[in-house]
Image 1 (cartoon, one colour):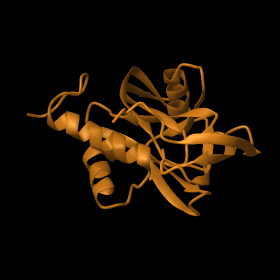
Image 2 (cartoon, one colour):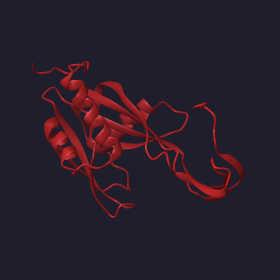
Image 3 (tube, helix red, strand yellow):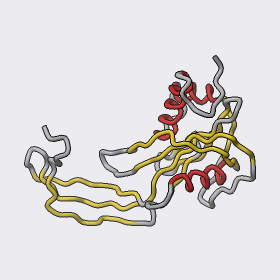
Image 4 (cartoon, helix red, strand yellow):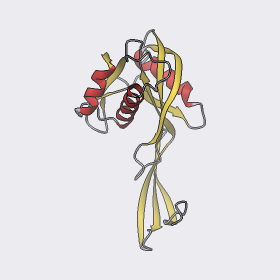
Length: 192
């Protein structure tokens, strides 16, 4: 099997909707079985950015906000978006300051993910932020945020108990936990 061969054949496409953040395209297709059908794809106009701040005492910051699409409250690591074609680390530094008031002396990439690849091309880059200093947060007008500092272990517990369900947050927290347990997280003092 050729893993690089696309088994879908596009017969036509039509833009259904577009705004400054997303676009929705409907494709007329032949599916892998050769049958005609449609496929909808949501295209994102920004890279999703996540930042996991960790201080020298292994505390982190969670951001809470009401998420319109879910119609419910969500606790997450600091997150936002960066325009396609720009350095995602610049967006990460901006989002960290906007949402928490934190500036990081050190930022290192933690992981890259596709967030919902059955319906969307949304791509994310998540960073670990260390060497933190506190400044004034600068939230956007669309954000009504609650920020809380918690131990990193408490954040892990919240993921394991299903209290943190945001994909970027879950993945970043669990990867950092794995790396901490393996003593493979550069720049973080780890207890023996």
